[in-house]
Length: 393
Image 1 (cartoon, rainbow, N blue to C red):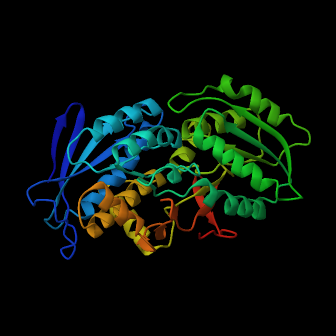
Image 2 (cartoon, rainbow, N blue to C red; image 1 turned 30 degrees about the vertical axis):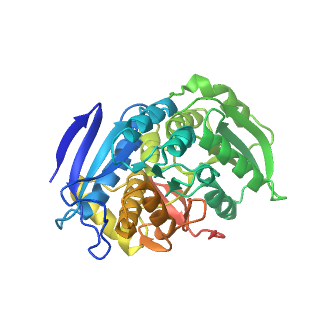
Image 3 (tube, one colour; image 1 turned 30 degrees about the horizontal axis):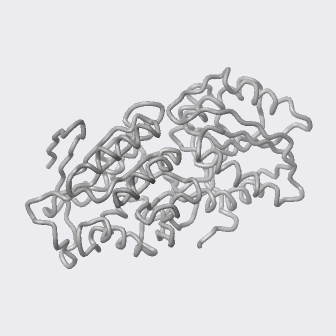
């Protein structure tokens, strides 16, 4: 049963969640709710993605609500798709009494911004989607359930090269975004390992998260890429979702026929791109954490149950929200106390835990370890490729 309340602009959603009877949380009275913060964008340029993540969070919690048990309160705060909004959300959530953990934020730029707040308050942060390499090492309380760029880019580039057989390529990235800069550096470093690959041109633009780009904003870099000599066969794009949905249609209208290779391109963005400009996303390649077509038994059950609840196939935003919450609930089952240090220690002990992503572990820094997925867009959907050289470290 749901109950919704508001405390200083923070929405609280109470749900009944059963934790393991053999591992009770000793300092949590039965009549009190375990409070979990959620700091994600409900509005702004990342609002749609944020809402999908929240649906995944709800779905994970509801799986545990069928049997009466421990009550969990989700305290929601809208980050408005900006780093500043994320910092404000974290400050407000950390002011709530007995709140030891927050799910969020969405972007790497926002995650980078909230690390000081996390460290100052000794509060656990579980990031469902942040992917910039190196961030978790900056805080013992920061965990991220999405694969970081250093785990997904090398096998992604190898797999894309094997299938697309490109020789001349371009890179394009958002210099105003932490994830995009980090991803581009990893992509460029990986491409330079191949003697038969020539980076013909490297282009960038600059827009911070929360800011929409226009066709005019990226006209110059795109024109330079499309007129480059020799002609490029693939364009490696490191960009935010709202950038992708502008860049791919614009390039298509300008006659581009090179394959876009975009780490973490979501099926939600693919469908938006093809709706804006039919065919613009066809042939694009993604390096990602999950595909709805996964043969994983847990994944297939998740897709069926999600469709039964929401009437649509879940996208990877929903899947990432779902997994981050499943992992957190598992940690709560294992925690001896409901305090930040106990929750942190329980999360650190997650190793090869079965999820819709496959066996899930956290490394010593708090970053996720599992197998990535690589796919190409065909007929407005992803078709999976076997991954060349999966990394498990």
